[in-house]
Image (tube, rainbow, N blue to C red; front, side, top):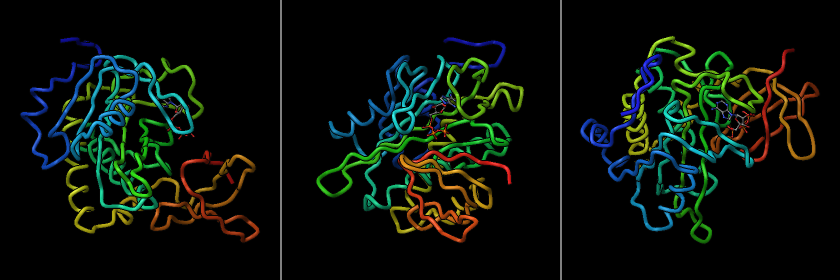
Length: 271
Ligand code: ATP
């Protein structure tokens, strides 16, 4: 078992995780890798091989972790929680952002329970503590014709990572260790996270919408933002989100934009 004595990091044990997990669906099938290129890449492949709903891929280290828009997600060995889930929800492609919502909410809740620190969600997919990025969610769709075949959702949470080790961050980064100064158990964090996804996934499949809960954890609402699209930058106040998770931004001129996640970059700015 590898151990970073300074920060209390221990390797994940599949036996322990399965013993501890009380989920109905999430993590009942589980793959664990010491090193993998990307847990989302493997989960996507597994989905196409027929992975059951709720299958989970975890890894100690990713060599080509993915972010949005072809960006890189960095995760040195043992320093982060790296987990991707294959879901087969009864949602339309336009509703797929709800998977990002339930996953973000489960991550925020797990961070609070295990590390006793309040994280917030920066629209559309970042987890932040006091405006510093502690984690990210990446949701990818595997289409079956015009329908969703599967949704692959990955999370990376910086646990014992030293933010100074990261090479190419554009937004200030942090980790749970940097915030709380003591060891945070990745295994406990993972189990809480999977339980949180499981609870919300069951509810969502039964008709519940995560929108209200998600809205209440968004750090972005009420703030001044610059939304970078491929052609333009829209500057305004983020006033709300709609049912599909699109961000509503009002410019000073009164013009209102509905911004879809996926092809934009969001920066806060001071007014
Ligand atoms: P941004 O938050 O920079 O606007 P984004 O939300 O599009 O970008 P993501 O897809 O969430 O980005 O993640 C990729 C970006 O996150 C990278 O370009 C890098 O700036 C930053 N990053 C990479 N690894 C980490 C990490 N471990 N912790 C915090 N930030 C990271």
